[in-house]
Picture (cartoon, one colour):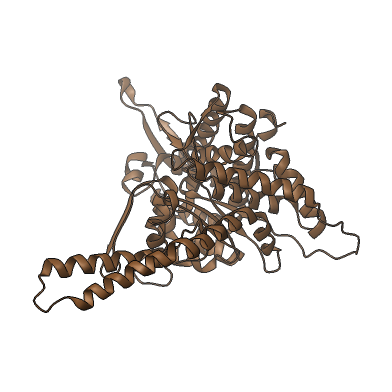
Length: 478
């Protein structure tokens, strides 16, 4: 069991003196027994760390759950589904293929639907298409435009149905293909899964075109906001309540591209993603690895299949899950913690942690489903487990950002130093006009090792206090 004291944040120092957030060890205790048992069996058989499999299983739950459950109470006036964007940074040879076994119930259900579609629906679609094509060919030369339009509309309708089978999940895909498929997928819900998601990520970042990011549908699919697209040649696409889950594995170099992408940061794609870097050395084969425990594997498959079955049976109506009062307090405390980061010495991390509470609540809903699909109340223990996991992810993110973050802070510190006169001071109001914020100025002064001093001038006769920045050598004379 996880308690509040166990998830306190450790603060370390970067070489330049900036404190960083470290989540500690991967919080395996956050996960339900059915996940831990299977993950430990996989780890023993393949000599791969348990966290890799737990993260993949979390993504599988997210993909299976879709819009089947909705959590409320984590924040006033808001609710969320269980869909997550998980991006693993893994080197080649990191057993990425094992995830295919982890999500087997989803792929098997999709195959059943494909087989049924080919057997039952495809012949009907083809028959209707053939019928209207014959009608079109028989139209008299003097047929009215209305008659021609009616037949053409039917042909277009069945041609479109011919393109889209009843998929539950998609692999690496372009945004245009995802949009075209999503409006035909059950409950407008898609599970994007790819052991090699580099192209999918680069397409979203717009690295293959000159007009910027191509991630509007991903942004909408995370939050459930309506998506409309009008393109010449592909027709109109209208998805009212999209729900997209992402489980992708990429090389570390791709993660670095994502983190360095300015538009992805500014438009909010980065704060929707949980980055999970799990580098580890290639294990030796000592000849003593135990076989996989098939009973634990089967138990996991039955468990995941049940989540998918309940969601599909619900017909698009999510089952409600409410936070207990204690869980709500955990979420509130986590939010306030992130506000403290953003308003204090971690102000530059704001673009990455802007959805901190929301990500925690989504992870918590997945962990809740790992315990029960019928319980209507999320407990404090589950909420604490989700906080521990997301905080760990933030700690890993900070480590990945170490070099670029240090460089950016150093450059910004130089800008601030240049704005401070050799004699006298500069007011906070003037610094704001130059593009600085008050938390940023305080952070940079703290990093200046005392060379720059932030202080407040108390005006005589009750005037308004004036925050100022001076050189240390000048502060004593003021």
